[in-house]
Length: 424
Ligand code: DGY
Image (cartoon, rainbow, N blue to C red; front, top):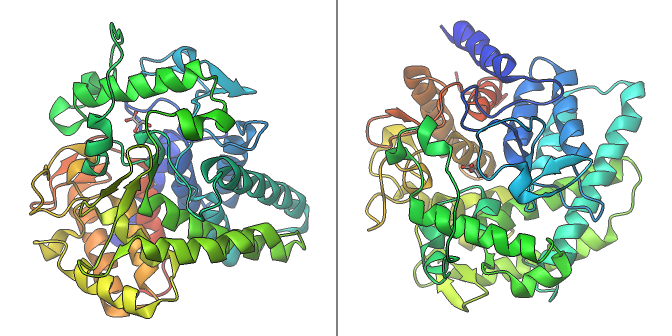
């Protein structure tokens, strides 16, 4: 049974594979290369084809901008129904791309791949180049997304978080005035039941922000202050903290300089702790644009476990909270706590279970609460086994939503199955 599923997972990835990169799914929902999808996809390939894993990352880095930014989408195929497409983004370096980024998972993934696989001598130069490019990207985030040197980086569009329509952004999105006479045609809700997708009022704002970024020529020097959306997100910063720690290890192994990153990590660890509300025992996001604290029970706030904070008191408190996040133990974790007023069981990032979130939390718990971590792993495997390789699932019933044959679900399934810490 398990063998069968392993083969099926590989088939999902190979079925979505194009030349040098892999689509997030085989339907028409996402006809391009997405940044954090690509990271997870590379990890999946590393369990059966190291070349494909490294190719995935190498192709993504071909689209890196001259200043270091890695875009959230690379449009390899220009002839699709996706909106916003390459011509309305109107930017890119060598490859048409979007003008924003996505969670910085690549260094974490690369370290995982290199920890597990022996790299041949002739591949070392290629890997060194990847590491140098990742360093340039991390430096870009620090320079342009934290120009005030606070130790925390901002995202300038909800799409940069990856959890596009999370209630985390409701307040900040409501503050945005939609551009007049906005004309565009969504492609996503023609392919997937609109009940599972973001609303038109969300898209109006996504496009308004995007148009404003384009008007400013995606100039990172200007945009920290000028963007219509500027939020410090705990999830994104937790991933960045972990990625910086892993990147330093990678840099060390190639005798490359890492002092600046080390300094940033120290500052970041101090500052992120300040986002912890000790009274409520939760992490708080901060809207820089509107100077407003955002308290929403999002699973992404628990990504902090992945960053391995040294503060054991905080770790203990949030693990306790995490155990109360769900009402249904079988389908860990809903993206938003189910008793929250704006929770929606089926709508994209407003409630469904996402496999990458379960995976990130599993990774973060492995060295803190092994029993709980293993339960998450087993339940995630069972969820996929019963309901297939989908984009997201109901926390109540396990029912699958969104795209089928979803690449990161297949990849992370493989990673969980092959995890050495397995209990059975
Ligand atoms: C989409 O198209 O829904 C993506 O999440 C945006 O990056």
